[in-house]
Image 1 (cartoon, rainbow, N blue to C red):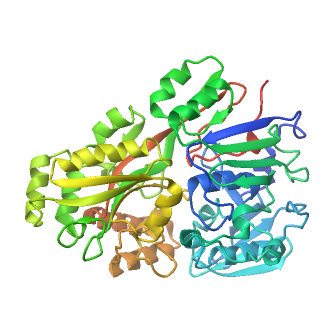
Image 2: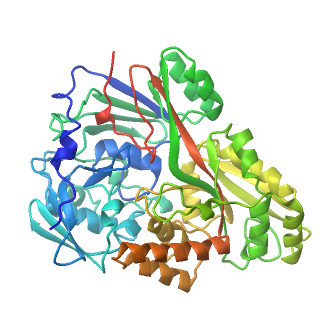
Image 3: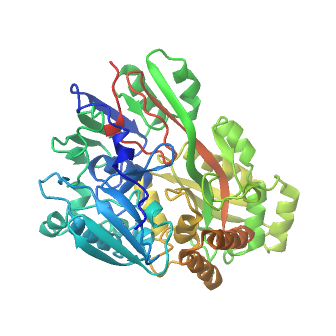
Length: 526
């Protein structure tokens, strides 16, 4: 067994013997976490809050490295490259006092593979979880999966006994509007215990006295008050008035002012996330618009849209410089990204109009653009700009903005033909993009592919990547998929967004490439 991590990595974080004094972190961002169920939704805001309550086997640190959490050692078997073995941390208990064991790991993986899980693509390669003993577990995969460890950073461990007692052995079907015990209640091994959950209003968590890491992390934060504040001016005003201590998503128009405000610290950095437009390329007829047939099924129409969207104007006017225009869904951070992929066409309205004519839509068409207004940096502003840009080539676009709690299920339920979405890549590998966004909705994959794209050849190419143990050969297969899907123009990439965080100067919370953070790491300087 090849060990790739040890407790030494965690020990380097040790700064004392726990919290020196009680400190409440009043934390605000534009949107609430969608659910407390750790396997129901693969959503950034949901993962970030759940990271305070639940824990995965490993997490990805600010510098991109993997940090031991509930697993202290891991590696691929030297005798069988389809077996991953994990050594689990001893002395860990759940918030209800139950011991954390390998049985809980096996249960959590099996639960995450259920049909109602939004995390199933991440664990699709695991065919069996072998419990060796209380603190050793082996994952047997369908063929080699050299990046399995990278898929587990947001895969939270649950208490089997608690889930069984509360009829929560299957993930909440969020997209169907299901009420579920695990959606409003939690029992993790994390540093904070959920005390109150009022969706879209208020979440309260307090320090877990029996947390395994009390001697290894600052734990200066003893209480978390997490409040969604949708309106950007209200969020900033709350920080300036002292009503909140930490704003996770600062509006771009306020960054410069906050950087010059006494008592406020601003941290900035690019996020490992692309913002893009998705289109229904597979159906014969769109339902949210007026057109004969489905214009998006035509590659010429998709190419025309790609030429009409002025990414640099969006960068300068809407994002005020806080973005990096891009021509691919692959953020530059990830394995498989190549510079040619990031190139995007010059705005060419004359050629775009010619393409519309060639596709049979010279007189244009009408469509609804569905857009979130509380998830990404200036998401509604981006959509408003796109509406004007597409009008120049005859596409009359009606904008419908809504909260992510409505927007995400609409995408999952294929209730939109044209939409804005953002996609982060926590595995830092292209396969994550392929599995969720390009693979047909079948075989436990493609859950965020609302394009209706179903291409057997593309799916077969993606499957070859998943089973390739030779990393050089694997990267060649990744490049082949990118060439194929880039040529198809199934999405309209816009940019990688930059994140700005603002906080009282007694805090220093750096920007994580996944827009993540752990309150247990925060040291308070009063």
